Amino acid sequence: MANLMSTRTGLDTRNFAFVNFGQSAIFVLPAEKISVIEKDLHDFLIENFGIFTHFPLPSFCAWLNGKRVIAYNYSCRLYEVSFFGKEKKILLGARLAEIALRIDERCIYFKVGQYPSLIYPKFP
Image (cartoon, rainbow, N blue to C red):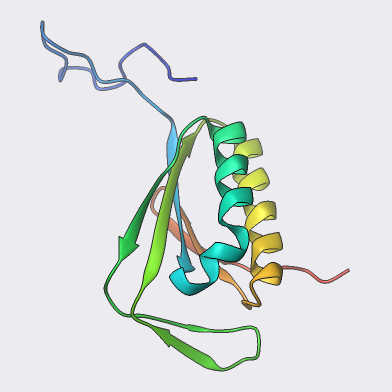
């Protein structure tokens, strides 16, 4: 739920107000593997965050895959959500770890605010 009080003091005008959606988080997934998890991921994001965006990245991406081989891809997808509280960050991180296992990726790039990280699944 958006905080209807503006946090951009001095930037509001008579015509508009900024609405705070909390922290933003992004993560990147290889486009060719999206079809395996896309519906589940989209349902999860809508249910838990209310909204999400995703963008195709036609630029070059490289990462170490689940077989510990450098994978190159010319098509990735960047997802973005916003939220308040660390509980949502933990929830999203846990789901990304599950996705990494399902799509055979060693880790997933994840950035909350200005802090980039990699999500590695822990094996039971």
